[in-house]
Length: 238
Image 1 (cartoon, one colour):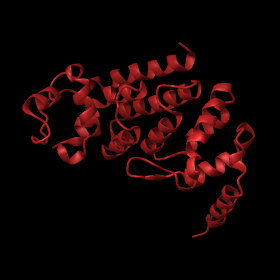
Image 2 (image 1 turned 180 degrees about the horizontal axis):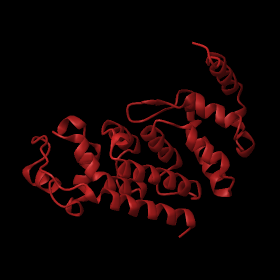
Image 3 (image 1 turned 180 degrees about the vertical axis):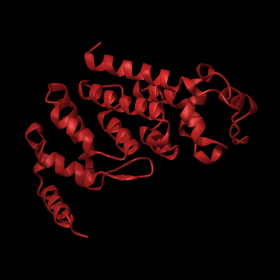
């Protein structure tokens, strides 16, 4: 196991320990979608909840539960471990949107801190994998929407000058340039984060010399970047 993957494993174990204080509680939810056995399982030990039920709850709309934030918080270690290892079988964008709805950044500092440590370790491990169990685009989307910021993760990518990071860059470019999706690229299940301007500027300036893809030189993309730059307010304006 590489150093970065070991750091990710350590961060996931620390996440388990941090959330161990989240005790079981009587879960009340939609009885049309979840039977008594399901609600009883969700009210019991975390490790006895089946993978199928975990996936269902991870994707479920918040309105199905009397106390959605508490339930999602308690399930977070298993949801995140399964997502990171590619075993959750739920859209990563949806997980990010659910975490935002659960207001994870307002959780007690040890919980929120442990989760942020996972984001950082997962991103670095992703940039050192060719490929990982979750695509680089999906990983970037999840952590961007969850944290509400794209730039810190792009900065890490810029600073990671390895063959693996460049290979991931090639995969990412190939993904987002399908039908020029990069010019209207939103992240999150509900398109909460408009990533187009930040990503296009980053690709065409900071990362252009590391990307061997002639499609990045299309006049349409350059024109779109100029329009986006012209539309940005000057510092102190507004």
